[in-house]
Image 1 (spheres, rainbow over the protein chains, first blue to last red):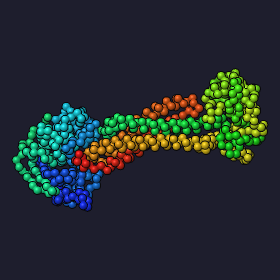
Image 2 (image 1 turned 120 degrees about the vertical axis):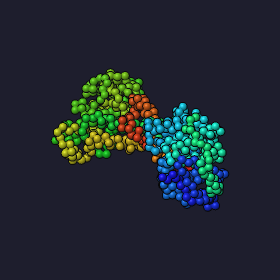
Image 3 (image 1 turned 90 degrees about the vertical axis):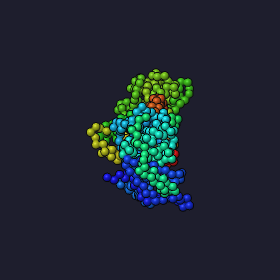
Image 4 (image 1 turned 30 degrees about the vertical axis):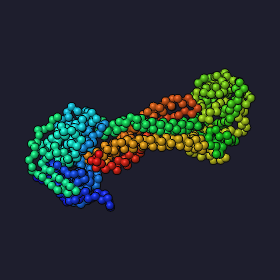
Length: 241
Length: 377
């Protein structure tokens, strides 16, 4: 069985045109595997976010190829890329990007609604996803009534509820204090190790490092170092707040 | 409630001030269109009220007569020729025209004389509220509408006044026979109508024809047309259409009403479009998030269209309430606003179309969203 959920081969990405053209990625080879938490680290401007966007099917590579569970993204139009994201990818953003007028349950349910899953079953799945991240008591709260850590947990529940093959997280602990950041890292680690998902975390946060299976360092659009199979912290017990 | 509808409604109601502004726009627009079209319908009905209440099948008119109030005259001998034709039950001359009504106070006001035919019943006072219409055949008796009591200086049956210097007495009072031109209708018998309007004995304004029940209408119509070549013969429906067409479009009144309605639609569309666009712009980050999560464009369009539909339904409901109050307030006026179920249905459809069309700008804006922007914020 092929554990490679996402595969990038010789990916190059040029942004802008003419004199303003930037060679953001210069031949990236990277695979994301089931059950693995991969960290993508590197200085600002190194190409981390561009790589995340390419792997997340929001940008197509200028050359090279990206496949998501065997589906190439190269010739896909915007709607086809959206369908791949919808079916295979869960996103966690630094700024959470929750819908302020919807409750926590409704925010999570949106991820199912856009896939055509509606009604009580979808609501039930959303509540289960919130319970999984320890928010049983906050299901009917609006984002404005939640702490930053709680909001990020809602965002993770939203990313996971549709059972994606891969979770891409962009600085998920960037806006959180130590305790909340630690909880989010543990949930992401559990997602990778217990739920057998491929998880890629773009981060500067050293708190995440002990949980990682692999650390990929990028600089000037090139992978400069990849450390794998290093000892990591044991997978935590299923998370509860 | 579906989640997409929930999202749409929360997006709308989240900013209450903007929602109120949108509602003001929709309601103003719909009420304006409703009143204009209601006036159009009311005007259309009022200009044909005499034709509607005549029991004639055919109208023989001077060539080119545009409406019931047309002052042209024709040769009354036509009546004798037509009355004896096969398939004709009766033919009755009608005399109409303006005259002067002198109140007991000495004040003079114009009135519109209509000759009533009580024998065959071709056209006689309707909606009689008081008095005896049959008395019109005796002496100088008249029937007037109670809505013009003040104008005519009368208080009911038994009141007196003068028409062209001849004393007249009110013997019947009607309710709701109003003239769109605000000149009161006064029903009198044929002979008096000639005297009051100065119409010669050998002339009439028109001849009303009733066909026998078993007559072949087309055949009789053709025969009468051939017989009275110097005049025009119209069915009641044709005469009604011609009158409406003249008053509504020949005079420009209808065009003015339509222009007002169009203005309402434009104002409503612009206001709703502006607020929807503004709302969408405020929620761009959320739409980008949806897109990043993999939502189809169709899903996002649905949110915007639902917002437009919510605007339409709530705005129309408020406007319909205001419209019904306006209808009641104008029911007894010189030009009542008429709102029919069909007009209501058409206005609702128009409101929906207007609001949905207003969403196009917002949709165009959303189409340009780059989902990658959510990683930059």
